[in-house]
Amino acid sequence: MDFSQDYSLTALRIFQNTINREFIRSLHVYRLKDGTDKEVEREFLFSDDGPYVEMVANPLLRLDRFRVLELFEGQVIGVWHCIFAFNAHHSPHLSRIPSLLSISRNPKLKSVPTLANDLQLIFKLISRTADEEPLQFLSEEKCRMIKASVMAKKKKRAATEDIARIALEDLVKYFDLPIAEASRNLKVGLTVLKRKCREFGIPRWPHRKIKSLDSLIRNLQEEAERQKQENEDAAMAVAKRQKMLEREKESIERKPFMEIQSETKRFRQDVFKRRHRARALKTQGLRVSQASA
Image 1 (cartoon, rainbow, N blue to C red):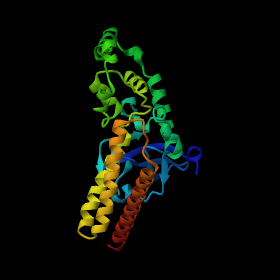
Image 2 (cartoon, rainbow, N blue to C red; image 1 turned 90 degrees about the vertical axis):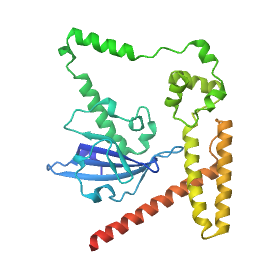
Image 3 (cartoon, one colour; image 1 turned 30 degrees about the vertical axis):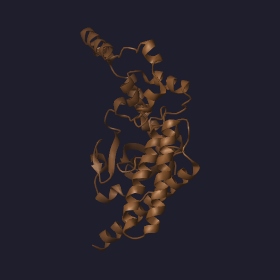
Image 4 (cartoon, one colour; image 1 turned 180 degrees about the vertical axis):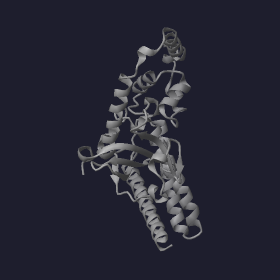
């Protein structure tokens, strides 16, 4: 159903999974033509290396019977952390929009139109609100203070000779950090760091690849510990795959232009699917137990 035709968006809450940050849930509140509200809960897989995918969503967040409008940014419900909160009746702010949810900075959002379309409506509202803000009521002294504050926060550009001295070994130290944080540690701008990456043949900052491999390695470590108590052969197989992933991580750290191997991508997708099925079964069991109570 096309909500843009028959419904108006009145509220949106977006949550990120604290265990696996690639899982995103959203709660949408639409105002129907008859004046009643309709709540819709959705779940997405924000894959690091592929397009985003919308999955079948069981009502996990709504099981607690809370009101959507009472949820606020920063709130944690189980393993879900609220990263964005929008109310049509409150003035939105640009500073509250994570880059993950910005269509201009994250074009992959277009692959999940049910979320992207609502975010686009919100951004248009924000832009219109910003354009209509009555700046003429600011006093001349207040304007000078704002300009002075902005100028004081601007960072000085790094010296050309300092940028030239940045070597690949300097970048390697920060591959485990997001590129914005790495640029701050290197004391250069984000554009400068990206340009240095191109000079060294790095098409994409490898933080996400390394983070993904780290997550798989940790999961395998936990699985190996469990298998030691039950099946020694299975434990050895898990340990073997763990070592393979560790070697792959070391290779990417040495050659950051390398991509994650296809076999590893398939294994990672299998892990995501198993987690999703386990979560769905857990939710189903919870609903059955609540119904029988």
